[in-house]
Length: 119
Image (cartoon, helix red, strand yellow):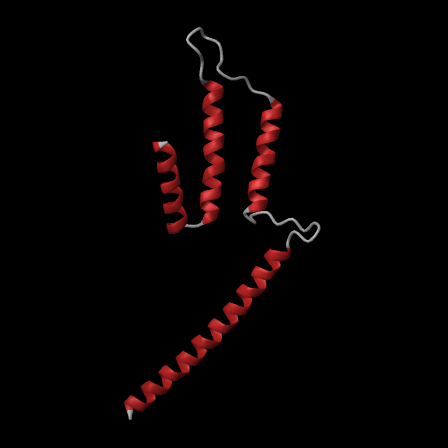
């Protein structure tokens, strides 16, 4: 239970200081790392703890693909699944244009303020 709390706390910190994309990629690499270690571990009698099976690799790839689609790293344009992505892009473009116009107005007012102070 303590390890889950540490994992969740580190996930929140990663999301806070970088992005949810990095957290998603780290979750996937954590799973790969644990699976790779389990393939190399051996029991006391010398037998392998786990054997490689191609179906596990296929299942893992499907899991990773689903994770990437859910986090909108991969955008699927099938049956309107990209609807929210397009809405978010439109909202971001509108926000960028209003921010740019605001920056232009502030710059022109600053120029006016400097001109007034020079005289």
